[in-house]
Image: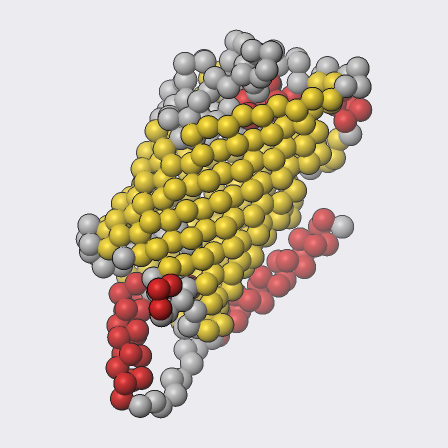
Length: 350
């Protein structure tokens, strides 16, 4: 059944991409002089920055001296365990471990500030606040819930335009940055014991954040592809280093009007197991304490809607909602699998 749905999603996405490749910019209707001047100004802005609804959320490119502030909320639900691509029952997990996770939720509130010192360079800072809750089942039949919350790791990023074709039909951006270990790796349960690796808020190490982004547009269509990575450096004070993460995404978007657009795409993710271990975590106690059971890979389908009003007090603001559902997951398990994820964001440019 999962493979069938995967095939359908690939066919739908391929058809959408074909539509992008054959799409032509629509003809503009004749209007009066006032409307014509407004249209000319809008076209000029589009040539510098791209149509606002066709540029992926949280990417800002444009004029020197421009600022952007934003907020993003993310909610993730994990439910049930996978070993590879196969579901594994709680009973089977409990034959190997005295305790097993049953489900988990993660909420993240992200504050963002961006500034463009030049037309080609954008600098940004992002700081999250994370809260998590994980349900557990014990071999004796009892259940418990663990919770943790706090400030996560600060990210300082930059984005530089390497190439921009005329009318922004094609653009290539280089991404770079560093992750700063501001998040806690010493979260404890009510009994005073250090909690599992997935329940820690931060990484405890600095990270490099290299990547590339490709943007294309032929109004009313836009398309994008991006590669991002998180490369961990050294080991933290508790004796381990989280695994590196790699991400590759493709998407298409279409303006339905000058104030709203729809987008769809796929995202592939790969993350490594933990290097080293926390001496306070017994890997035989439960899978979330085993550093060799934290890696995996995932392919997800995405669909979103972006509102970008063009007048009144809402001008310059963007509101974005995106849902993400796994198509296939392969986890070094037993490990909790993602059920779904939703992102909601707001941005203001000035």
